[in-house]
Length: 412
Image (cartoon, rainbow, N blue to C red; front, side, top):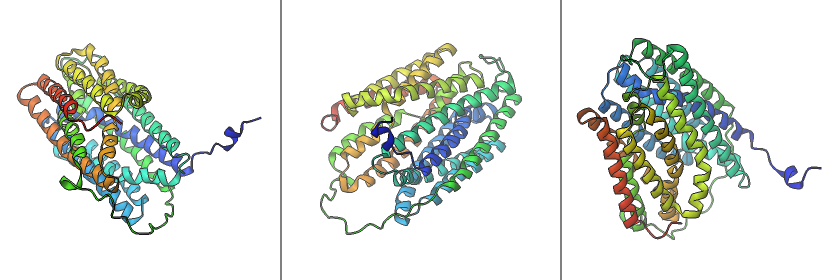
């Protein structure tokens, strides 16, 4: 006989399950391409590290701006599915452009189209999940979606590594001429397969149904009107300051991939090392979340930043063998800090302007990410790869110091 709890446990709504599979396929597609981007740009097309940084920085800024715009616009128009469909369709076009690229400008265009899609879909998709799942299962619905995201990311990286190994037969260590025409063609094949999987993801979005939502009633209360700079209180800016300093240290993850290639790993081994990052990130996320409940948000963020600084120092001096544990530790850092910054912003933004506070932070962090990635590229080209990681570690240490001095109140 089943317990009452088992019999009353609700199944996840159909749209939540469909969106989970949409995100799974999209993440498989995206993660097949992401770790190969620096190898393709720098090794095959001959672009500079500065160009790589500019492309990734511009992509991060575009995602930030598009996310804010899509969230507000989909709320105002009371329509989610058009944003979701366009958001999953554009990356198919972008990945196809990258597969056919003969120079970095076409990669830039493809990358921006791809990232525009991500920015357009994220907020409306999350709103669709929240609309479909009642309050009693909403946490489980988002947990399922996150699990599908994580699984897709890991499968995508492993699939890319397997395809490269099959197409090139490269050993774990690269040969003296690592960037060959053959490896370039193999990367284009991987990009093409990724575009095909993205097309499947886009096709699935047509199975998602828009739900009718009641019109908001009444008028917003004038109470709790925000005050201070740009309508945000001082505690908000004391939280934002250290986060933006750290964002300046946190250039694109593709520089880690480029460094792994630089110290001697073959293309498919680099992708496999990136899979180690995804694996530890997934494994450490739940324990890190539990730890943050006990220690508080600021403490877990500071601990994560210290791990980050140590990883960056390691990448400055590592050889081929050191890449693997460093990527594993980088996954631990990501698990400790991912999303906690936005939770901090939510804590310190006025309740009447929480969406505006999150949107403002998203745009500011996008601008700083652009600066960080361009600076990293310039340092790589003009000083050397190690300088990128020494500078990143130093700025992360500065962020820890500023946060320790200026953090608002006690960790919630």
